[in-house]
Length: 320
Ligand code: GUN
Image 1 (cartoon, rainbow, N blue to C red):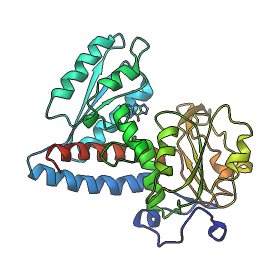
Image 2: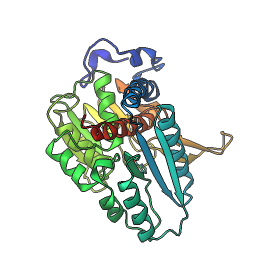
Image 3: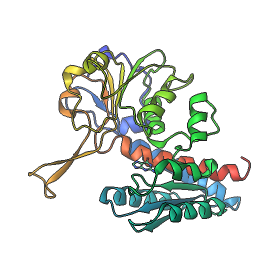
């Protein structure tokens, strides 16, 4: 472990989730998203019990259009997690040839349904449906994905009463929980998607806990990517390219967050495939101080933050 050379990490007492994590055999310690998400989900279950006592059961409705296998897995996990937390988790499955008008009519119906506090339309959508139009129709107060322009605007302004997108919010929560010093740190984000890269930058550049960083966003047109990533105290990668970040691109002691989820061929496994991130984990763990694994890093945190947003949406119906 390179704790003596850590730049982006504070020396605070390890949290309970951190203690539960076995250190990596060489190099970096692991950020255990599964363990942290479990803690958060336990806290949320307690909040849900309080809401039950006040006559409210937080309800999340996920809409899945078509039969994309990866989306079906994600949606199943969201529904299961909602129910485990004591919430109402419903999935509405629509055929792949659903028209945009039909989907918009369903969204309007869910907007008007008082038992539904959070609405999530799983992306990607079939090509006959424009995702931006659909997002615009979701009531911003039920937009637990944080994709509606009202919530995007609130995030950018720094207004706390909106919903932040779940994956960036989960990453920030991991940084806070593991005592990573973000204030004044060089935070380099690889990837400029609307779901991860851009909102991640908006969160990290705000003032406050887990933020106050100096942020750089890199993307497919960035000249000399490695020159940027090598400066990073905190490197967040969400580019969708398997193992693109190698050890020579990472500063010794950096904190590395891998948002990538890529399924690659692997003849040695039963299924013939394997899930890998955007970071070459085995190489990068030798130089980083803290690193997220794939799977078991960012993924479980995304679901925990979705539940948190839904509980917040339900709480707000009580004016709390
Ligand atoms: N598809 C992949 N990730 C997400 C997400 O966070 N929200 C939605 N709605 N669709 C997704």
